[in-house]
Image 1: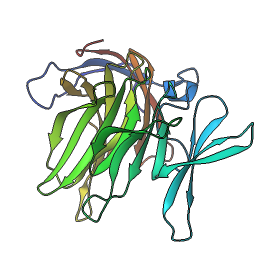
Image 2 (image 1 turned 180 degrees about the vertical axis):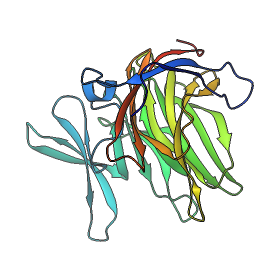
Image 3 (image 1 turned 135 degrees about the vertical axis):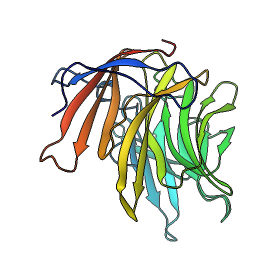
Length: 265
């Protein structure tokens, strides 16, 4: 089990200000922000995303197996076609739906935004998207991208109002994947899970949480070789809850990082 009140200085990517934190065992009252608001984070079913009120975004395939997104009102029993695409996620304010689109064999996984009322798409397009998550205020979208040539992971965010994209971290490790995005309630910071695994080297198997500020600063929250952090989410602006999985343990450990200090709050 994870020790209570384990204090550590996180190792940053570079010379950024390190995070200072305390780790303790989690409890039943440590409810994540995404548990309180299902519009924040990855929906359990990528083809059925909850929206504001009784609205949902459903993915249905046509006779050629091409996916299309429908806006459904489950109370009024109405349904209308919105666009071709998959993996929809509503913004918390209900103004946009983020989704992935297929344009060509070169542009096969593109992040786009669409107005669910008018059907008008925004100018935001991000190729080779891997993961994305809305900020609680609906003004930003965090994303991870896996570029192919040359290979590079990118972590960044989109300013929705300006349509501006900001890449704030890169990694060219072929054994690492970035996902599990979750925003703090202040919509200024988010975490990402960097998962490393090498099928030819059993010693390379872990995942660690990284904290990013929209200004570009970042630091490492956990450093757990041979262990994986899963389902991480913010409890409040100071605390993050996650499950720590150890392959030698019969049960998962619920842990909570508290007193996250070092990045803008």
